[in-house]
Image 1 (cartoon, each protein chain N blue to C red):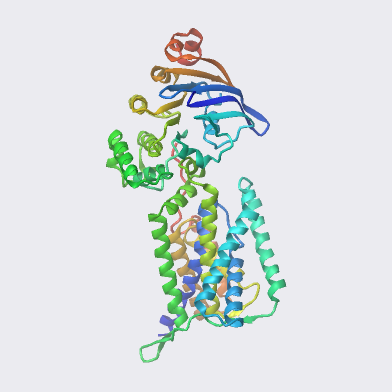
Image 2 (tube, rainbow over the protein chains, first blue to last red):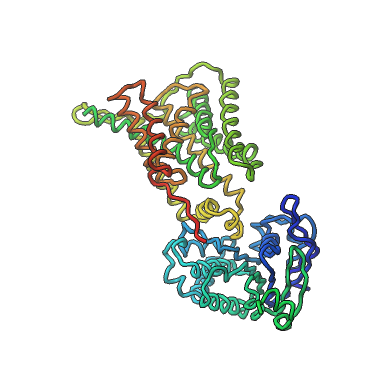
Length: 236
Length: 293
């Protein structure tokens, strides 16, 4: 059984259909890339999975349970974290307070402290700036904070929306290395990216989304060599 | 000595405004709406205290506690029935609804309690403090009001800084969607904010009526609007701003009444609002909205 299974998902914004009946699955331990152009529906798909938007049809099975009707705030404690597009850190709160909020659904203080240790280890810069307001961090640091904050809920699966957006090439490299590390530590990853080349380079499998439909899917390495993908998304 | 006594009265009145302003500012911070019914919640709290204390002969403490419970429940109910369905509506719709709720509460009170003015007995039994050979008298109500304001401010700041629920309130006020992604129940957090604001309104109302002991269904509306002015003055959305705005406004009102004109004192208060909005639209401690891309 797949860890996350999306079946015939349809999402509307008013009368406009943003997602037109897509199906895909994410197995435990995989890194799955969801690639596509601006407006293809990538962000909408993630937002629907974590309950920020309600689908009009279809099912979202997380470990066998349909979560499409569960209130969004309850999905986190089931083991799913979402790093939203644009990072959305709490600018008026300190780095430490942001991370604590990441563990909002958890109760065991010792375990939370342990997760905090681990996040500080993966992102030493966050520890250096733990008392600084998140709004004063650089873009790259905010992205690290957003990822660290998501990890604080100790998720089984982490959904990441455009983690490389607006970052310099060196930072993009760093962020993708972190995604690899997160995956290596046993967390399943569903990655939405416009930077298709980078995404495919670290993903196991990928789905290509085009105006609300999945038009292509398969092994990430094979996709990198696919001519039409190269032309449309890799700029070659 | 006169000036000093005016100043103390101003701080006392300002403390009441500050406690009421907290309700405005917290609700604004979290729900991005101006709850114009807030002033009338105060009035309901005063009637509860009046009925239990003056009519039933209750001790002031349980009377005030009961009025806090009633106001808290009222605040939550108003939010559930009137504002929650409008969560994604345009701000103007919410504002008009709030004004509607305000009129509803006033007229319901008119129907239930009648239009006649009730004379409110102070809940404070503390004797007045006489200083400088009796030249300066500070009433017990004044002392209790200022102390209550300080205690509330400290307790609220600690609650927001130190507790999980407080941090959730900050998170929701900054970004509802991101807060939900942390597992915060946004609706419950908004309810909690209304509950706290309304509970504090009950205390403010009782203190206000103890100092100005006339109670009618419209009693809450003037202090409500002035506290709103205080919240804007201090910077709406900011808790220390509510304190500073409230105290300053109280002092301005009392000094204006004493030295300029007692009839113009309200006009002076609102002139302050106009000037603040012209010079610094965000208020004393208000921050500019900025977004990092």
